[in-house]
Image 1 (spheres, helix red, strand yellow):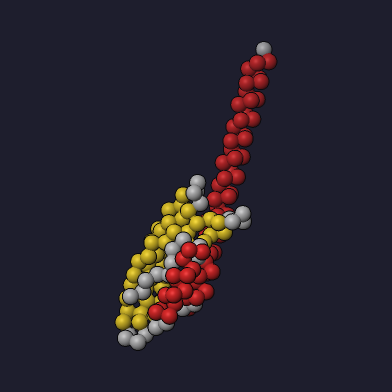
Image 2 (tube, helix red, strand yellow; image 1 turned 180 degrees about the vertical axis):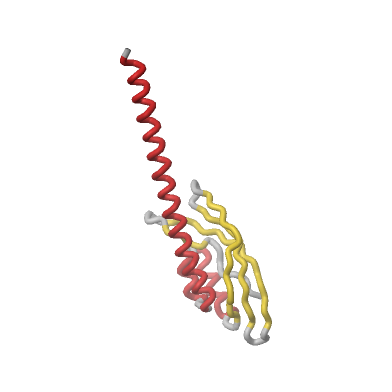
Length: 140
């Protein structure tokens, strides 16, 4: 007679545990997205301000050297807009991939241009912060 009650209590307990796990995962994902938005916004500001050398602090180590070599070639480029098109997050791998449209102009020739860069951002470290796994954009 107590068996149906025990089964019901077990079912309720399992359901509550699953709901709690889903809620915790959703909160974690929301925090990751908020952190990503803040990181990308700061990265975009540095790009628009022309702080190309400082942008390397957002990058994974393998992209820092090649990006620093590219800094001097970007000295007459001014970015006017950085617009992300869409982001796709792979939660299991801790990766965010998306296309970013960059509007810029070349000051020495008064030429306005636009380019698209596919960016990959990765969660790194124990504190799970985002690092750009892509170098500086090409602004030909």
